[in-house]
Length: 394
Image (cartoon, rainbow, N blue to C red; front, side, top):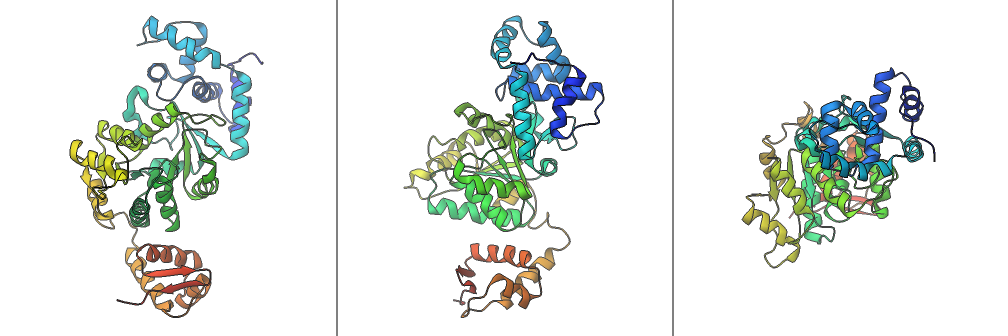
């Protein structure tokens, strides 16, 4: 195992793997220290959070390595923290994760970067030390307003349908959709947002370099192509139960409101809802059949925790404090006209490929497919292997 070196040259050599080649001595050590801290601590470690906030990442690491006391940290806390952290101090492990990050196109975002989402600092000492991002880091600084759509992994068809309706309407109207990349409600929300060309962000409990669950590898890759796949643990880190629970606090902090679509009585989604309430974020829940155990958690939020009753995307916009379509660019009316053009290009009898519909509408195929996705969710069109067809009126 290589001895750990914390010189400016060692920092620059390591950070070169992330494409950072023009840093001065202070910048190199500070940025590298963030990388090291993300390896030393588990998510939500408040002792590390206080130390890094008080001294900066590099000075806090220097202080730790020198065995000195940390400001605002008791002797007992520091002794226990050192026993947690120091066994993880490995130059080899850090370099390995940076090589993985380089290979997977994962970048580092710290508080010193313009892309840092300042709203997560509301978590105070429990805020993430740094974030690892695959995709477009700039998305993180454009999440005000945004909504977290979360819920059960074992979702019912009702839950999937509602999640897709909400996500498609909101993302199609310019509201970013954030979720956890899991099966069930999370996946339905991400897919619907992607389908309409909207922005979506996935928060992972493991490293941003690999999908969890593995069955969502294609979905996570699709999210990274247009949005962001985010983690606070370094590449190669495995998802654990603790990391899932801690990941939920970031989902709540990143967004302006959390909407729970479907959740059992003890669902992990209630953990996200709890963080949203503690952070004074908006909180909504979708009601379900009173006989459905899959909605018992949502009914609990509505009854005991003052969650807003969500039955449509308009309810979510009200929760976010925005009017219908207010996030749209000046082309909102054009979008309405485009929908009409797409409808006019469809037939109720003949199946037509998206390329043919685009030709008839005089639009780009990508624009047509996004509109067809919304119309499909509304039940206005049907799709088959032969193409698209409009539903007959009535």
